[in-house]
Image (cartoon, rainbow, N blue to C red; front, top):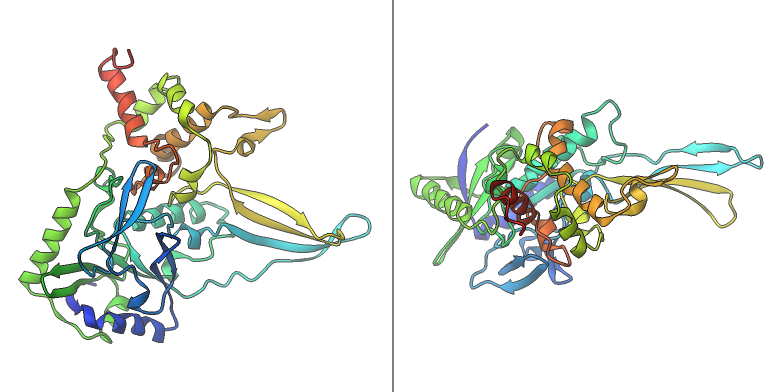
Length: 378
């Protein structure tokens, strides 16, 4: 299903109205707590109009643009992972009998909400696909995957501005979404003109667009969109050489660079919380004050917490060095062995939201340079 159309800025609310009439709850970007986050929205007025984000290692600031762009930012701390793998899910509840056994075990209903994701970037669409493969691709699908991708209406937004920590071009995940969406928007601002070039990616996308005032795109519109795409691809704030990245990290398991990064790493887990593909969880059992009921919850966890690798006898990865090495090597190397792809989409969130500005592209480069120039660590 293909087709390219143009929607004027003044008609954008008609697009949201078409989704609302289909009983979709629209989730999109909005400004809150001095960041651009994903939350429920009802109109274009809820979007981060005229805002952009300034990003670098350990640095995120909102600042005003000189125009009224609706999507003139890169990515914020939120990802769509919070809907695929919620941070806290009740698995079951039971009554504790007098003999200590469990009865009246009940599981909460797992009805998927009817969601529409507005503003998903190409890197995020790749992340959604990766996470679905992890959560749903095995013999035992994850019970907390409450929003199956095929049930979600996705309106992608082609990036019009790369962030200071973006490197999706290196990972072949952007900045232009080619699949995985129902509609894909490219925002065009040129003087007094403000409109969206819309690519249709599914039958239900075509159905929605029929209820929105639009016109067929012409060559000028297509060319304007291509200019935006090319400009964004040239703006990447970071770069990662992925040539034999798996072999590089496997060969350097005892590299001294791991000690250097461990001296800075706080093992806070920020990088895993903001990462759109990290999926570590733990299970907790809690009781009420009287001890009559017990609940089991699945919660987000992180390979940076010392308890995550705890087995009888102690933690397997007891040092910051081993935990950072585990995270980076899994993300860029052993993920290939498990799932047939990289675990990184180049969104740069882990760099931006690291309190001390640790940069995995810099760490990979340092290890590669030491192989190419053995005196690089002198």
